Length: 324
Image 1 (cartoon, rainbow, N blue to C red):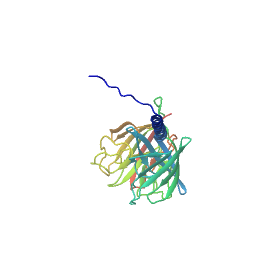
Image 2 (image 1 turned 90 degrees about the horizontal axis):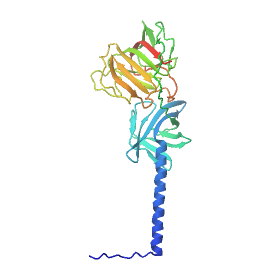
Image 3 (image 1 turned 180 degrees about the horizontal axis):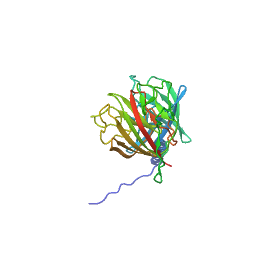
Image 4 (image 1 turned 90 degrees about the vertical axis):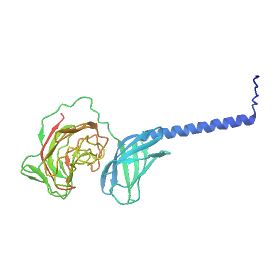
């Protein structure tokens, strides 16, 4: 069979069409490249500070790539737990997402709008009530340690007489020391140490009545949940969890009314939690601050904070061993 060659005739119109096609293709490539650059710049973890009236509230955001183009994330407000963000949109350098409320009954979504300027995240958060709050954000530190810590001497954080060395976070201070037991008989203020710590090992014992809830905040930023959850399946928001982030490998809680204990080691972001003699979280990375944190300054030392606004609770034998 003979091969038949059809001559291609180069015409002025053909050249014009070809050039137009190339220009469109180039423009599309440039647009995609710019979009990809914008997307990449927001990826990571951000420590946020929100101006809410007369107070500065901590918040946190993580943005990461899902697949080849979709940005997703997690968001922590000044209260509650980490919430998933299904889609973080980046358009012409502007970052936006919306998520439903968590502990309120409003049907309106919370909206987040921001830009990046000089590697700072700046923008507004519109709450489910419609109120707008300005915020700024910095990239969260990695908190990696290059050497193993050398531990100092253990410090008993209770003096056996009174609450000296501690202070309440609010005006309704219900905490007292009774026979060596730090007691919060009813909901009121949280209590924190005057002293601040970086890396440490902490032993703490606690007891609560049925249905009660408290928490131990490490550096005042990462809550280890203390709650009456005996017999339930483990959860990141139940007993022993790093609230909203890390789920224990088993439910180690005893029944309400019994004394229980945590032995917690915090090195940078790495945490180990031993509850009632069982290792339930082993050397895991805490992604960011949890709801109710004092601030979002993750690179700084912070206090031990005991939650006292969710019901009665008692603590005793609080011994911390800081890194040198």
